[in-house]
Length: 130
Image 1 (cartoon, rainbow, N blue to C red):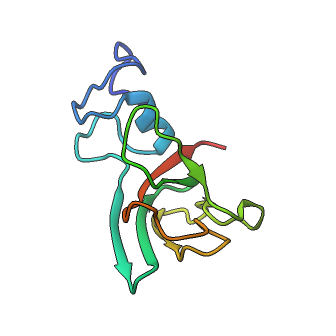
Image 2 (cartoon, helix red, strand yellow):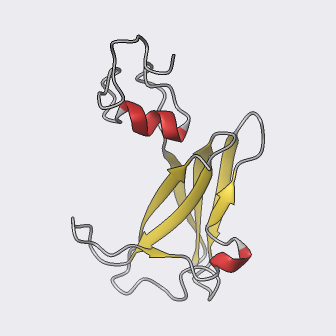
Image 3 (cartoon, rainbow, N blue to C red):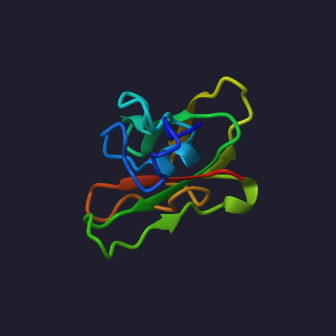
């Protein structure tokens, strides 16, 4: 029972945390617990070009990182990281307990290829159940 009762639907937000119940089910969080939701735990910078994204993970979920160097808007274009063939920007959490994955954006050809044009970079994570 992932949604608290048989009368709750996947379309709702039964814990009122702003994340839909189906999205929480896919992310592996608890749709009935307002303190359980998917998040990027932190974004930090090391030096001039290295950004570190610490992301909460759940076992059995596939994570993909996207970036945008423009300002956030509904029509924003999100790009995948440069070397997905080598798994850069994509990972499957295999640790049974889940945990935190730290992704390193070093602005190289393998990640985002260059420094952000406007001086800032936005990230988003896509979570799926493979």
